[in-house]
Image (cartoon, rainbow, N blue to C red; front, side):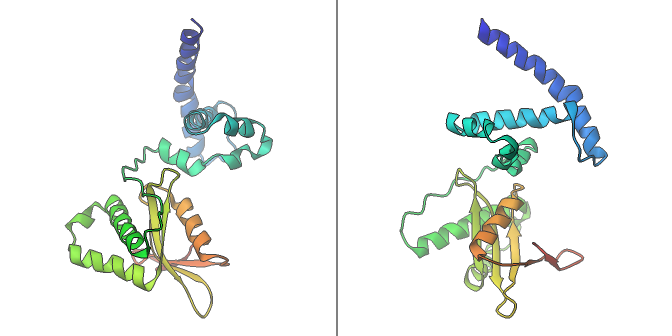
Length: 214
């Protein structure tokens, strides 16, 4: 049957793509070679093929193949990389905003913050719950809290930030993205903050406590 032959061809190709081709890609990345060519790009192409097949409809696929040099702009490269790195977001999706009021939204935000913190810092469950709750509430009350989620509405990160009244610069006091979605979180902050030429992020555990975010 045709389907059997196609399946065999797929499996045979996988032997090469995730064998010598993957070795070539790993070797190129180890040399910090940014000019990937030849068989080294096959694992990335296969990942993109599987990702798009399972997540997009026929219309999107048609637009993708017609996009020419813009094709890469249509691919969610960060999400694809997270999938390849086996990041698993087991958090439940957020319910859609239903106009029930800001109080309920605040509780949802607080719950999502706690789950995200627990995902990146497993030790959060050993901390005093009262202190942890107070820290989260302080973030909500004294700063802007931006909660980012993926297309399935699963929380992927949050940031607590405000704008310096003197310089207009965005100051990020805390940001958590346990599943590797740092770029999406940064984009959500930028969208919520509006126009801001630069942003500073505080990293108390780093050698430089204040660092340019963008």
